[in-house]
Structure formats: C-alpha cells, structure tokens
Length: 189
Image 1 (spheres, rainbow, N blue to C red):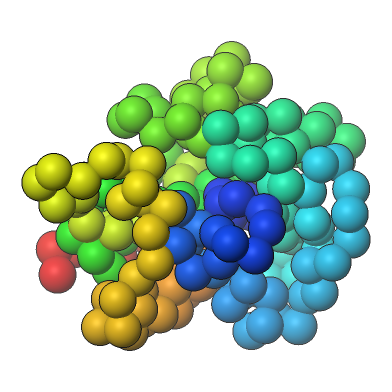
Image 2: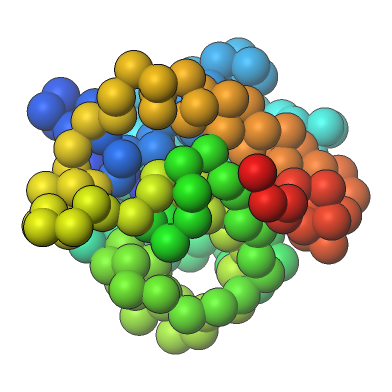
C-alpha cells in the first residue's frame, strides 16, 4: 500500500496558488483513477483506491502547509505503512523552473516548511518525493506572497502539463520503483 500526499493549504483562497500544486496533482490523479478524495480523517481529506493494481491512499492534509507532518504521520501510523518504502510526497519547489519535476528518494527540506514538518514528525528524511518546479520569486517579492500567489495564464498551462507528468511519474514509482521514475522524469526542460 502506498500513501500519496499532495501538500497545500486548505480553504478556497489558496486554490490555484503555487504552494498548492501538490493538491492539484492529487486532484488530477484522483480524477484519472476515479478515487474520490472526500473522506475527512487524520486531519486530511483522503481517498482510497488502486493504481496499477496497488492499493493507494491519496491525501490532502488539512493542517495548513507548515503542519503537514501531523496529518502524514497519522495516516502512516493508522495504515501501518513504512514511510521509507511507501510514502510519496508531492510539493512545490521554488528552486526549479516552472513545470520541471525532480524525483528524489530522500533529502533535506531545502527550506520548505511542509517538508521540514514531515521530516520532524517522521524523524528521518528518507521518503520518496516529487518536487514540482514553480520558479524562483522575482526580485523584491516576499517569499510567502510569491508562493501564495496565483499562476499566470501561461504558467497555469505549463503547470497543468507538469501535473499530468507527475501523475505519470507516480504510476512509474509504484509499478517500477523510484529509480525508473527518476531516469524518466528528472530531465531539464
């Protein structure tokens, strides 16, 4: 069984923001697999189903980004899933160009507070992740304002394509493992 967590912030005002790209991927994956992510449990919206014959739980933590680890930890504990093998976290990354994916099997938080909180709750940084490039903040911008800002029309098209790619990457990670996914999707745009 895999736990696939897309990070973001609850509430309508945060929809379609850079920081909510993890939620966007979960929404697209749910649509493609007909998994309804509507059950309120473990401080998250969750949905259960199958991807490539493997049982999956899709989660959208409702704790706000900086406390994502609370929800992720609860789900892992409840379903007795090993984070090192069967957790995939999808989130925004300002160090990557818009639309660029970077798949990793472990690593630091890189300044991302949601990932920092997950690492704190797990006690380690060894879990699979898909970083979704949203581009660096323009000079003079406040970082929080930038990541909580909305995509432009052109950026949204690029990000929709990146969400499609992330869904494909998740399928490869589950069916063939993270190394195969890294070889296929960790390419410069």
